[in-house]
Image 1: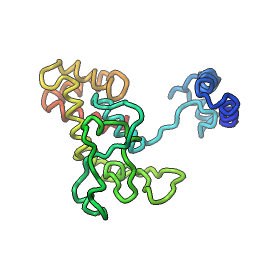
Image 2 (image 1 turned 90 degrees about the vertical axis):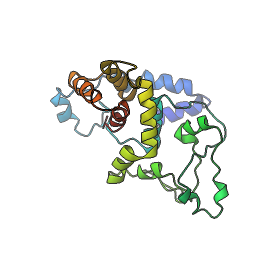
Image 3 (image 1 turned 180 degrees about the vertical axis):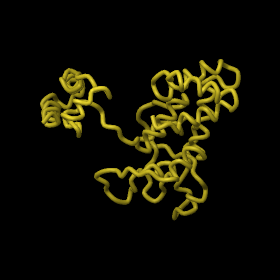
Image 4 (image 1 turned 45 degrees about the vertical axis):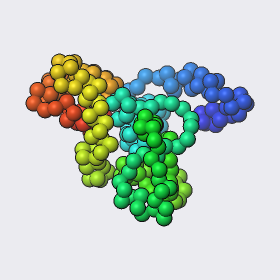
Length: 227
């Protein structure tokens, strides 16, 4: 019902979004508090979350994962509009094209770090990072994305070129080697990657890890957290 109200208000308001944002933010649903784990009566009364008392956990999409890592690493190009972007891919992929010269990498390197929505969508060349995290094939229409869990995803996040290059940039943002004390690096890393401070246990383990391993490995570990 609320969706129908939103859509009707959007049409009647001349397709202006500000009024819709105001309607959503002032709604009782948006302003209600989230139930806490120590409130079992809420789970008993609303086990499937029909009343939207909390946000249902879900897997991030391929685009969201890439953009989140770019943002944490301080490399996200937030410019809006313009032409689609072609990023570098394995030459073996371009060789499979009928005309390999169709894939011409965008010259400006800063454009390669734009939000994933600006990456060119070519039906017969799927970006490996996007494909492994369930980006739909472009040859067919997809009403809903699949959400899978399999080994190549972990391998991509640990050994992939994108994850490791952005982990290096993230490490530099944290202060690199000796730029900040380990405690400050850990605290900043959690705020940038997860939007919160580390718990006492997380901070203790992070400091111990940073005392024995490079900051880049710590940054890569944060990219691989379930949070």
